[in-house]
Length: 418
Image (cartoon, rainbow, N blue to C red; front, side):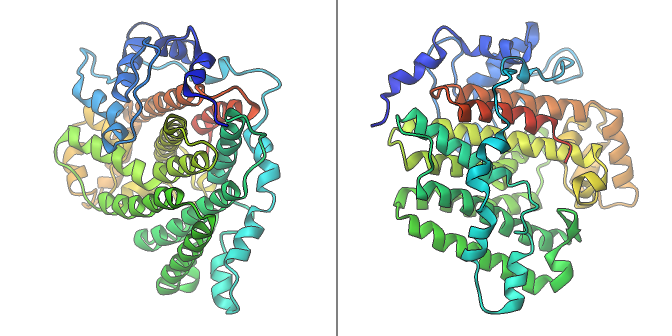
């Protein structure tokens, strides 16, 4: 039987939203004020003891909206940030590494995926198995496994995964990989995960068909779970991926709309899969919509933070670390967080953004402007804001090793180098 919702609040009794942020990330002064306002934008009322949670599209860009509609005297949109201190309140030696804690449930992940993709035609099998070689990070299924077990414990069950929850972890990796195969065709990429892309090896037509086949296999596995609500939730991911890709093809002239567009695109292309997969595993064990919303909001905020860090790494990491060429986004004509923040200090970037860095020398000049600006720092700081909100959300669940691992995971998202 699920724990009544009122019991969820005992895990945070006496702690207001602002004080949580101050404890986790060393906020004070203007930083604390910004944090409280950011949380209000996502539906939380600091210090009220109540949270109004919503997964409407408007929430996706609330922090970004505040950034661009509030003007401080300083040219910087944020005060100079301090190093992230998320690990301060969760530095207990007993806290397990998230990957270690989820490893038992991930041991046979890729074998299970290959069984779903089993076909007699050898070439199609080789195409589908190409990225499921066990060398991926399995970041998304790891989050899904930890969220499933945290929700199970919160609902007075043991931490073991239900069969449907295990399937959702597998499906999340299949959908993600299929999207990568299609992205590489659209972007004309020749490297992915440190190896030549499927489209480079087998050609674009076969790559598209391979991506389609992986998605169809994921859909079959999803149908077998037998829960219509879960099917609806995860089907939304496919729609978001397509809409996000179309959003990436366009741009906005208005500065405020441009940042909102960027964050919404980041949600649809990256965070939607994590958020809806987390929600799906919670649905299977807990009928309380508030618990399901906690799972969704954690995944949404971690997912957007993950994409923001990814966009930073395109400027700060070398190709050998990323497993793909750096400056990829600029070469594709994409204005990501670092560029949009840099545009505040270098208005010359505006024209380049509108022409998608298509003129000779645009990429090099934009790169230099970003490095000379606070764009990278500000994007990292925004990622920290999303991680703080993810921590606030997951902390509403009953304490468990899995819940604490999800908290620690936010630090790993912020400090990753590939």
